Image 1 (tube, protein in one colour):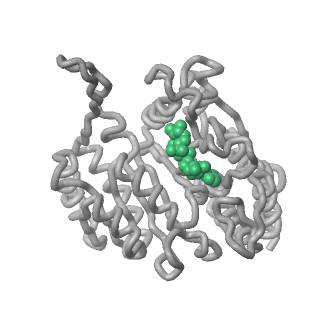
Image 2: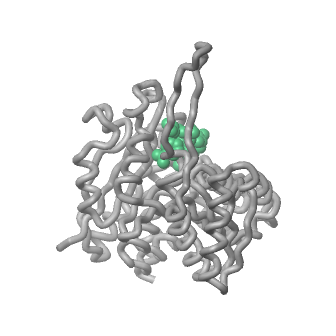
Image 3: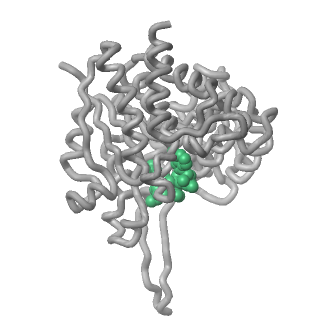
Length: 363
Ligand code: NAD
């Protein structure tokens, strides 16, 4: 039976950037013999508008039938003040949870052509290659109780709960050690064990699991120090293992080392092999509909999809080579533009990657 890929464009720039990745996928299906069916669904604000909920049952059913999901981004000002349970971001958390996508891999890799676009001097980021392994279905984003309540004195109080069980920590730690074994063999586990008991347990469990991986070098680091070190000497890191909240923040930080948040893809994986792939950025409502968003993080997310969910390693490599060639030609979206390069729009960037892919595939 032909495998199916579910595409969820989402909100804001989501449809624009996903359309570019879909051009690449369509080329691979039509011209390169990739045997796949593409289906589409609603998630986020667009789903609230069309179906009244951010994650319609139909979308979840389609996702469960698919070999993998490619997502744009969700959210925007239009839905910021609706009932909390109906907000687009809740749909995203719900689909991650329902599919069991506990392991979020966020590679922060600098394309050498973008050294000028990095927030740091080139010498600090040349050959930068960090893999952030973020726990995705636990921690403070999911812990109960949560909410905003009114206290006896009449003022409101917001509260959330940071919880991690040993099994949740163990399974994400094993992913990080396995990933490190295929890289430089170093894991830095990031926590706030000096203040937060949940991450004190995190540190203990990660240390226990490390005994099963004698060839991997394990280091622990507090999150405040890790943020500082990422800006000071980012190349010291190989694999960064961390919680849901810390990983969310540190990966945005790491994105600027690579030139732009518009460059960083991600893979969210379940233990049964299910995968959802999306750029790490949000729906960027400030630039939506202007044909200026960078689609490369989404196109690189498609590459991760081919690599991790379909074992199409050659095609995944070829997409990365095509992106590299486009950058070598000096083509840039606005976010990665620097003097001496050519600024092009979202659509043109998608077309340029397909053109480069045609050359890469033939070569
Ligand atoms: P954001 O990532 O959408 O944007 C942050 C900044 O980066 C903005 O200036 C934006 O223009 C820029 N940017 C983001 N992606 C870009 C791209 N591909 N090309 C060029 N520039 C890009 O974060 P935000 O502004 O904090 O959030 C906007 C909305 O997105 C909110 O509703 C938020 O909840 C949602 N969000 C969704 C996801 C997701 O769907 N996974 C993740 C983060 C935020």
